[in-house]
Length: 312
Image (tube, rainbow, N blue to C red):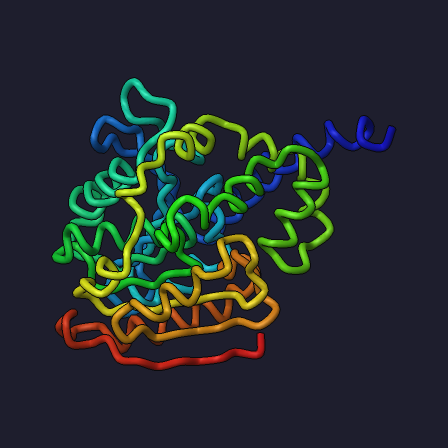
């Protein structure tokens, strides 16, 4: 009975939140823009630099998410330089590759490369959460000349032990029923705010759409990240991980910590898979410090090992 009463409210709650965050970004000085890139209608938010900073920052969200996930962080990064938050292909307000209802990792990588070349116009600092971190790494490997540095927030894509490592994750994101939604929220956020439980039906609908289900169905293990990929990175790298994150396979954090070349590291106790939403001030401050360290230095020589453990 309660499910029938709350289901309609739950379904509309996420669009309401997206609408509010869209208007909030515009009030804070962002512009909402579109550009056709590689045949894809790409939507993004842009904020001009505030002050003397001139290093562009490009924010990339995770699977089933959108650019507005960076709403709390974006305005705090404008002292670094101009800031852009891109809706990846098939998510948010961006369209699909021609003739498809989803985009592969390679197509997302090509979209980001085109965005840096044609919209930003110079190398950028890439900041990616989950799938966005995976894409950022692939961009840096393929075209290091486009990337000044990487900030990875709980990045996805680790090959680990192959598909068997990812079976629990794939089962989780099926979100078969309300119980599975609650479990996924706890894995993502640790202690999710009550409004997120209310948005459960909306969350299920997003994970059940083609950009997610078809992406998973067509995922090629060759696109996943191996230790040698991380070890080959030529740009400075920073890693942010919430210690309450149970969304990705449990070996993921160690995979990145062990194989990234001398990353700056920020561990956030009590934080889950979405640090940009749960700890925006700490995340923004960490990114600003990292940007200051690497600004104006040669990418191959600026990565220094530094681990920071924050009490949240």
